[in-house]
Length: 166
Figure 1 (cartoon, rainbow, N blue to C red):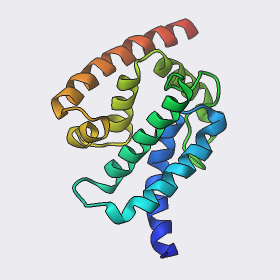
Figure 2 (figure 1 turned 135 degrees about the vertical axis):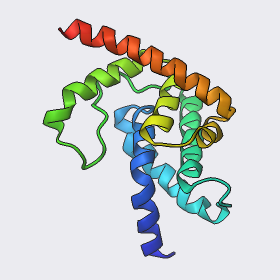
Figure 3 (figure 1 turned 60 degrees about the vertical axis):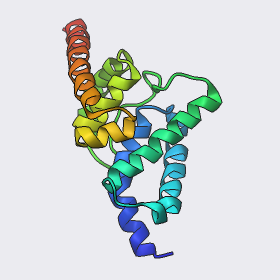
């Protein structure tokens, strides 16, 4: 096993996989599930055919593992509000971002899972409609339509959330 190659793959994919898992898995298990997904990605890397970007391929593996997690537990797919803010590991200053992150998490808990997923994949991770469609197992047209509805839903929920603060 080439440890330098592993480090490069890990460093490039971990932030996206962690964010994906953080929105879907309870905080107590986020790190374990993320580590398991990263191990699966590494083990399956020999089968990567290059038909999509490495990030898209990795997020498909993450989506399957998260679905498997909930099939086993028969729970909802969004981590409960109040567990922790959505922050990248080792990234931003929590004192500056925690209140806004909590408000965003609260808004996300009000949206359907597929709307949260399309916002994350298209707007946060920057995947194309085609790549997002591949991860979500839908058509690119469905992604565009879903993203439009998700933005509207998010905007309405955000306005309600911030109006209650003022």
